[in-house]
Image (cartoon, rainbow, N blue to C red; front, side, top):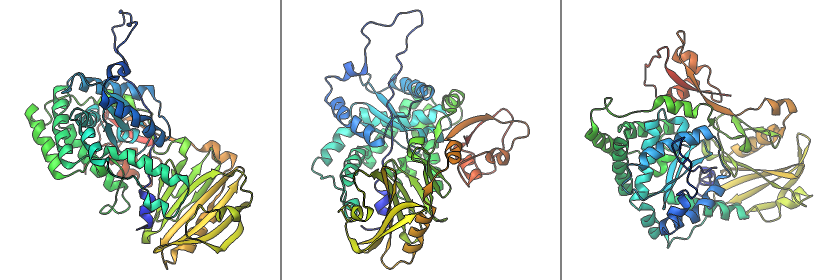
Length: 485
């Protein structure tokens, strides 16, 4: 393992859902008894068969579906307008809205398109979402996925980082899922080609063609905002597989000029877009628990714990990950207890590589049975703590560079703060959502940002999700996004 942060940052999976275009028809005409559906159109298309093979695996690796009929109709409306101007009119598309707060979108061969709810929350109008979807459609129509698969056929998917510490099936499952998600990575030349196709589709569909460059800037701003170290963050979001080079932004603006002067051409679709995302789930989903500041809470499991003040928590589908200064990293997950009645025996059962048996100790954590031990791998030291709650075993893995004095204090804080939630705490726990508000006569950037929840950087996040430039002021009647329960 090269770094503690690498152990955690390279195993991120998301959760997703699939929505299919609503078939439009005139109300006074009866629907066909044999409608032309996507499966029928694609049944003899080898590219669609490739996408179909990978689709259920990707959806499974993302952990479930995000269902919101209003938002699905919005995305279908945008995608439908783009499909009408596609370079390949015979190409059908399936749109999946992923249940993830990450800012991401990607495509598979055969017309399988994916966009996260996190990306929808960051966008400020329909043309920006159209810019993302048209870019991904460009990858499909240019057959980039086929070219990429040929390059990767000889590669062996491995999970070396995780396998150095965990020898369970989890490592293999994560490696498989990451291998499938690598289908989202294209060459720089393919990205530029998809940009050109996407901007052309934007303009021909009647959307603001400058939205592509505008949203690339927004995503770059979000990446800087969310990074622990803005200069070194290796995000798994959109910009990690879609580099936001100055060349791409300049290219997008240059091709947009073919349709007219910026600000005078194309529809942004802001009002119907905001109506479509009002109430959209933001941040963590209830099924995966919540991050509130330095605390992780899971109402369904009834547990909570804190991380040190200077740590950043990433709540992933397969684990809660936290990274801090000095290359310190934390991983937290849970497994079914089964017949593992002895926690010390469970610790030494072979799922931790490099475990030091002489360090195994049986303890209690806030009245709960627990055990702890030390492990070592290459230049890293680990504290491994397991805690039993009913039929679940919860596991903390804390990693530091060898000799670091942070191991004891970090692991002890996790143990000291891990506890059951009270019924009152569980009932008070609610998800965060995007709420669209109308600016009143007395409202200002400061007053509206003060209503933001789920962040200690309220002003920064408010300006970010509304794409407000430095020094911006608000006018009565404007619609703004805030994050609240």
